[in-house]
Image 1 (cartoon, helix red, strand yellow):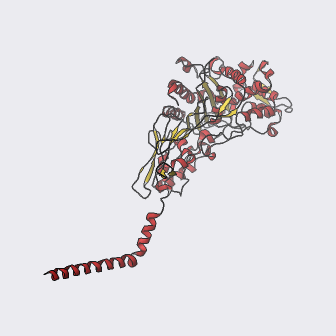
Image 2: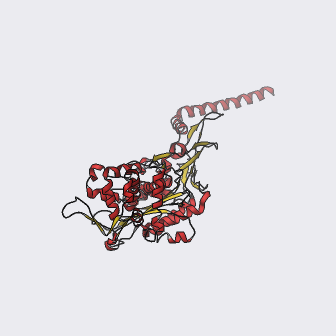
Image 3: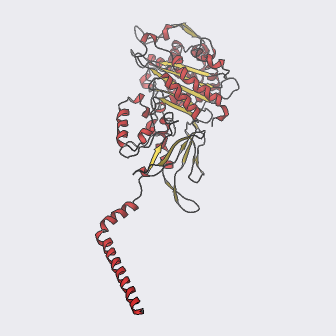
Length: 511
């Protein structure tokens, strides 16, 4: 009986051994090639398109971007919540699902090294993690900016709000917007169609251009802030002049007959400097430009950051330098006068003009603009914190105070160019606001205007301005005939005021 049991066990073991031998041969010979390929795939590192990214939050804690499991070959889907996707599109940019397309724009590109998975050391050794961005931008203010631009319905328009004290970008929006989820889609045919659609849109109206920072236009009379500052910095005696009350100004030494500039609608204006700035008198400021000269105007413009790219945390391809023509180009009497009023070849971005207003508001110090206040690591630690710093010491505190006082004229003087649009603002009990309007012509004999308004508040005596805003709204020929071109205040005012008012209402709730 025992021998029989031993014989059965022996046969069973022999069968098992035979099966094992056959399977080993099957694995080592027949399936070797396919298993090798599977092993290679399993051990290859995943591409960045198959890994999650860190989240992005607004200053008030709203989720603006996240990665969620996609259960397809990409494994993860970048999602921009619908409530804020279009309003923040120019800031966030997007991450495309495939390297076949331009893959990253905006903050997604600039802070990619933090957002993508990266190695991080710790007490338990190195591990992979993603970091989260916390912005300076508030959703309530950003949505107010988007809504104001949508009401204006002018492609290529933009508005920027900044805290003059530290350079925090509180809102930055352009029109039109786009839905970044379209470009993050895993449907590559849909992505390709979207790229084709947007590449056909002119750069200066294309939402992928980041209009507030990369599109520059003639700043028109908002440049008079810089010209006025140049008076006190270089030729203060000009501030005591009384300018003739005239509708036109003939540039001296400009030929026979001379080149003649005329005020808007041939209105008669002049008087002292306060009157000239309040009424935005072109004849007076053209005369001032001639007296200051190209060298002084260029020096002052560059002190305000012209001809330099603002150091904001966005890819350099999305941030343009504003331009003041070289002295060699404008060193003739007529062109000096035109440049002094923001015409000729002067050009500025909405960000630049917000910085100009902010510098005057902040006692002559222009703080570096920024969009991210801090970065939180995967373990919850602060991996990065922004420290406010001065980008340019534009002018003295004394000069800034004099220009600030003069900039109250456009909103408080009944003849001021912004007086009408600010009546509703003051009726609601808001504090004194300094401002400057601008209505720039695109080129000689071309209809349409670039309509500007810059402002900061509170700007009363002893008050500390908390917000500076710049709005630019282009109006093309097709809407207005040359004979009835609108003014900067009437077109840009309805865009700027809701942003300024919302910021002041929010007060200490801003970052």
